[in-house]
Structures are given as C-alpha cells and as structure tokens.
Image 1 (spheres, rainbow, N blue to C red):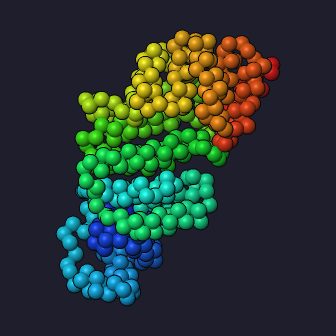
Image 2 (image 1 turned 45 degrees about the vertical axis):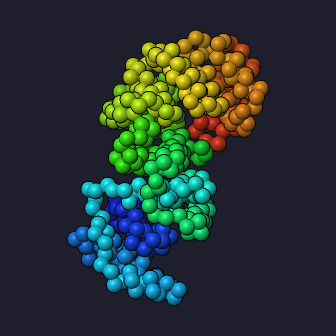
Length: 405
C-alpha cells in the first residue's frame, strides 16, 4: 500500500465503513466495498492523486456497494431504491468530525455474538483500518487465520441480524464492557507481547490508544472509558525506557525515568481526573496504580503502601489471580518478601494461574530476596520454560544463572 493511500485509509477508514454500513444496512458489504475502493486507489492514485482523497474513497466505495447490490438478483428492488435515492447528508467523511457512526461501528465489531478473537480482528481491521497481514504480524498468527476470523465475524453478524446502530442506553452500558475489554486486550498485547522476539509492539499499543481516545470523545460521561485511556497512556509513557538499544528488557528499577514520555503522563493524569468524580472502576484503579508509579522519582521512593491499598480495592471490584499476584509484588515492596510469599503460595496451592510464567517469576524473585537460592533458581528456570516471549525468557534465564555463582 502506498504511503498516501495507507495514511488516508488509517485516518478515514472507520468513518467510511460506518457511513457505508448506514447507507447499505450491510456491515459485511460495506467493509468489502471499502476494501475494493482501496485496491482501486492503489492503481489510480499514483497516476492522478485526487484533491479530496477521503471523499474519493467514499464515493468509489459507494459505487462498489451499489454494484454489489445490483449483482444480487434477490435484492434488485432494494438496489433500485438505493440507486435512485440521493446520498444521505453526512455520507462524505469529515476528518475533523467524530460522530456516533464510529461508535456504532465499534459496538458492531465488538458484538457479544462474536468470539473474542473475531472481535479483536474485526476491530483492528474495520475500526483501526489495519490490513489482515498487519493484524497477523501483531498477534503472530498466519494471515489466513486472521482472514478466517474476519470472514466468520462478518457472517456471524449477518446471520444474527445485528443492526448498524448504537444500542439503547441500557444495553449500551451493558455492552460497553465488551468494547473496553477488546481495546484492553489489544493494548496489553502491544505493551507486552505474549510471544515472539519483541517485548513491546508499539504499533499495536498505539492503535488501542487511538481507539480509546475516539471512544472517550464519543462517550465522555463514562468514567471507565477515561479510566482505560488513562491506564493506556500512563503505561505507554514508559515505553521509551522499557527496552535497551538491542531490544532486551529494562526492569522498572533500572529504567531511566527521564526517558519516560512526559506528555503521555500528562494525558493519562488528565484522563484519570475525568474518571475520578464518579469513582474508579477496574480500569480506573489500574490507572491510579500506574499514576503512582508515574509520579515517583524512583522505585525506592514509590508510595508502595498506596499501591497495596489500590490493589486491595481492585481485588474487591474485579477479583482475579493476576490482581492477587500484583498485590503480592506491592506487599513485598512495602512490607518485605516474607509478607508477600504466603499470597503467592496460596495461588500456587489453588492452581489459579495454570501454565503461566508469572507465578514462578514472582515466587522466584521473593525467594531470591529471602536468600532461598536453590528454590529461587528452580522457580526462575520453570518461569523461563513457561514464558512465550523470547526477550522475557532471556531475562529469567539470566537471573537463574546469576544464582549459580
């Protein structure tokens, strides 16, 4: 894809697909027509660049949609009505306008009838404008797998008769959690890749942030939307210091905090302030924890007692073994490893995170601090075997090897 086509598509794709879906009433057809318009742009724009690239894509995609409807014999009457009618006002995408069409597109892409994998794939393809190849690279799966998820997702939406519209207010709040969950999954994969040879995938993380900003602009009264945006911004602020020039991880205590993105911290704190008046939910509480880290000059000077309290609150609002594990880390920093180890041992005894490298990682760290070297080395070696990310695995192996000296 040429740079110009890619830039226009990334900026305008959500509005184009949304307008086409409203025009045709068919989500799958709208997305296919938009992709055909992009393919035509790749051929024609190098010869003659349009004065209004987004408008050109919209007009071309609309023609392709009408052509597709005309080819469907069973929909001939519907085509006649659509072809005769003037384009509804607002069909031409305005790059400076954010409207409810984009929000409706998010809710359609994250509809509960879809599998979690299809929701992520459709959101990145249709709302974020990423290609199947880019999504496949981001999540380390074959391109045909991504294409199959997108195809199944569109067929499922069509079979379920999902309308292109914002759900009613009560249902919207009910389904908002699903939309936020998809954005959180996308961001988390970008912030710490589950597999592969890169610790951070900034392109994936920043797509999630861009979508979260759009959602916050469209749903300004929802505190958890601002909470998720704050969490993403504050976490991404550390990206510049999280890896060394060779791509190896830099632990929090070793990071050069002068490299943290101050602008991202300010944006995150501003979003957190918008979430605060109505009380923090799970994302807001996680963002509040990230804010404590962002305001601390060093690990030693971090307010670990406050972080423990915030994790305790998070454990009541959204209990999970990962929250308990993170609380154990905070307790170790605030009160010592001896206080934290029973929390981790309880997770081991209950087998609440089977197959995860996180539990042996934390347990190995605590045992190291307690001077139980042999046990610590065994835990870190186990964590390395379970870890799918090569960069993280190398750090764990290095820690285990250091205990042999």
